[in-house]
Image (cartoon, rainbow, N blue to C red; front, side):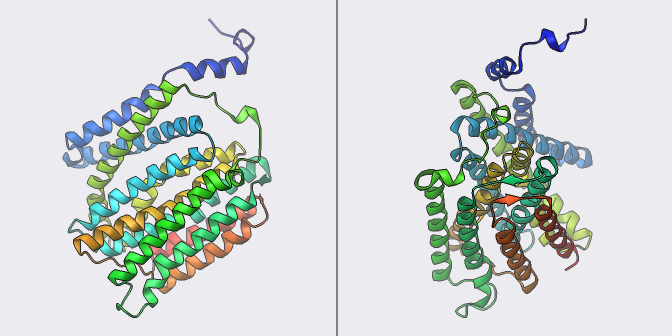
Length: 374
């Protein structure tokens, strides 16, 4: 029997009905499968087990995206975008700290490479894809210039203080901060991020609100019970992602070294993995003509990467007396400066097109290529 479109309820009614339905089964099953894979050490069962664990890991990431979006929609903008940003930061900190405590490779440099890779992925990869996707579908998109300017200003200061300045201080040779300098930068990074969150959520909340009011782009508001369930499963999914990614990172590292590639690629892989939820959510928002939400997600995650990750890693380094190389080399310094300069110009008039997206993606492609071929 064929059901015609005319026999179905109107779109608004269907959306309301969908809002009462429980969470999709796959978003509940995959985090459970992820925890089962961790408990059974599935990734140790040869190549087949590694592939299966990798697929489950990707599924957990997708499930985390769904549940984070449910919670974010219930909380509302701009508080909602903080949910996914903090979740991503928790994953990243866990991975970096676990690698610092391991004996595999140069852990101090890997921490720096992961943070730098996250900034480059966000500033060029995620923003570039969002601007390109939004521009292709909607030609021109508008956003609040005041909010983006505040984010870029904060990001530039934090990036330079944490990744550039260490290579030019004289107290400690090389790309290292002294103990007092590292403590100061950790406090400054946390302070700047805290100030930005206060401005984004309280002081100037209107700077970060979407500039469009297209009701067709909005999903129905989830119930309190659905939101609480989504939050609980989100935590499970994040734990599964952290544990599986930690277990698989050694395999990725061995594969990179066996292929004769730079170890910095491991940092790129880790950053890309933990930023996958942020990327998908930002991409979907851009396609729905919600470029403000996309930029909130992207820039907020970049700030959280420095403002939360650097202090956490610094504390571990100081307490356990582990070396922590933060200063980047000349090539990465040029790419960082170019990325910040282009982002300031491309996001400097409150409107975006495919041209800006193409420029960001080209810079991102060059970054990936020069990481493989320094």
